[in-house]
Amino acid sequence: MPLQSPPTTPFQPQAAATGIGSLPFTDTQTALSLIAEHLPEIPHWPQLPQRGRCEHFIHQFLQPMVACGDF
Image (cartoon, rainbow, N blue to C red; front, top):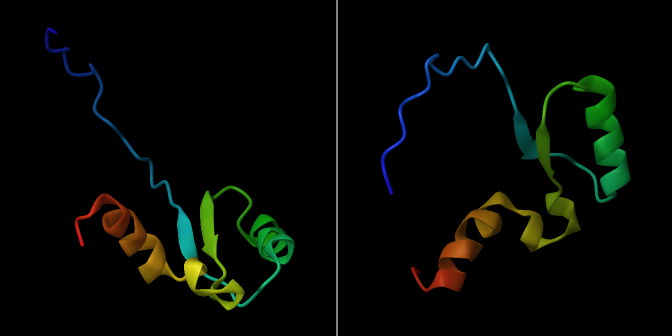
C-alpha cells in the first residue's frame, strides 16, 4: 500500500476541549442533565463511581490490559 501524502493544512485544534471526570451521582440521567446544562458544547465522558467499581477510572483503564493479558 503506498504512503499517503500529508494533509495540505496542518491540524488546528482551535482550543477544543473535552470533559472527563467523576460526578457524585448514581443516576446517569442526572449526570447527563447537569453536563447538558453547564457544558452543552463540550464532549464529556462522565464517570459515576458511586454506581460501583466498574465506574472508577482505574478499573476502566486497567480492564482492557487485563483482558488482553498484558497485566
